[in-house]
Length: 98
Image (cartoon, rainbow, N blue to C red; front, side, top):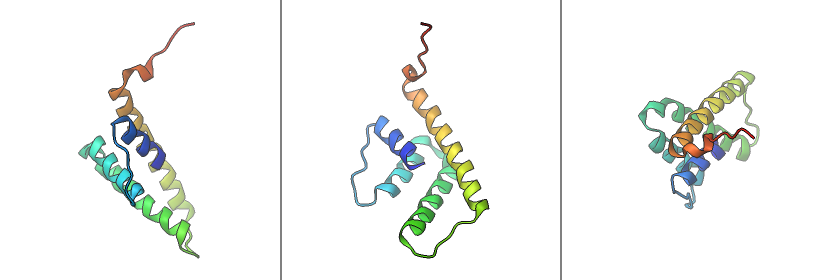
């Protein structure tokens, strides 16, 4: 999710370079994708926080159902970002018959 969000920012001409880059990526992803995706981006923010806890806090665990939901949300977010990228750059869909 984070890498897809970062790719969206870079394509849109933004480079997150502050101390809170992950949060900036989440906020800008919502700004670029718009209100239609705000619920999905809120899930992205929730997963960013959980990732932070899992990475930096000892003893924090994630349930299987949370993991499965996170994967499903990640797939939805990446698909949404890909749609936006295709709108911004139609050549990414260029198909050649060779």
